[in-house]
Image (cartoon, rainbow, N blue to C red; front, side, top):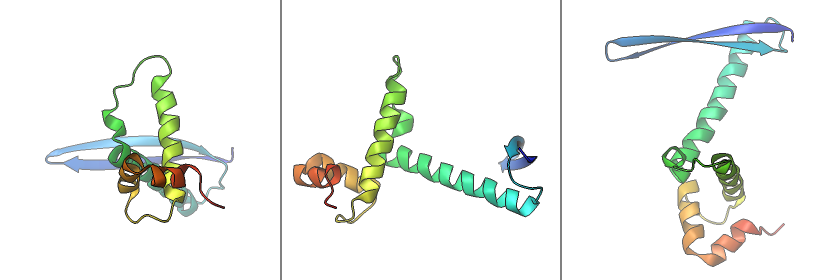
Length: 116
């Protein structure tokens, strides 16, 4: 650990303003611009991944709660997302590809067993 950082985010919705503070431990030197870039990059990737999982797989609507079911399904969704992103023959987004794989066994085979 070389430094720690604090990000203060302010959000206003209607007339209500909330402030959130996030603390980070980092191996970066004390460069504020580099730290800010790293934090923005992290959250950009994180938000993009969760948005895709929610839109394409409706993850937020999942009702799996027993034992390790939620974690197991999360692993399966991430695996499916990775396979769908690698498949380039179909046009459209991840949701379209996921639906196509459900309807078309030939396309599902392409997704699961890509040719090298």
